[in-house]
Image (cartoon, rainbow, N blue to C red; front, side, top):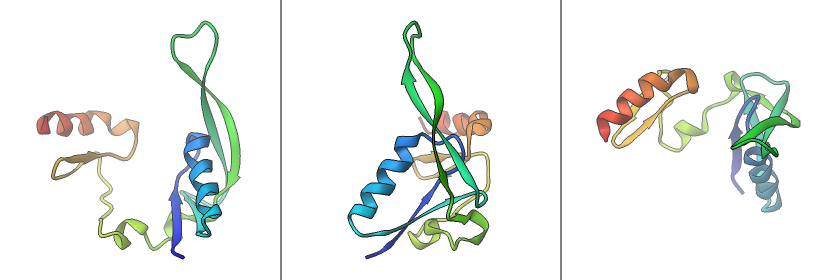
Length: 114
């Protein structure tokens, strides 16, 4: 079976990391978790709290990263993609960004495509 690399970091939603991780293990895949550094990651849980109009963020599971980004031959390249370290990257109709600080550049490109 193929090897699977889950790319994540601190404050990722617990279920968005742990469910795929465990489900892929059930199928017999070798699954590693890559993060900016090899350390114990702190995930979060988004849940509803009485009196709030939307969900809140609470501490979730912790899990050790298996490998640091710097030590990974990227799955992106293996899948035919290219990682671009920029605030907004446009590829056809897809616009991506690294994280919330990139929102202004990301949205500027996204709106241009719309």
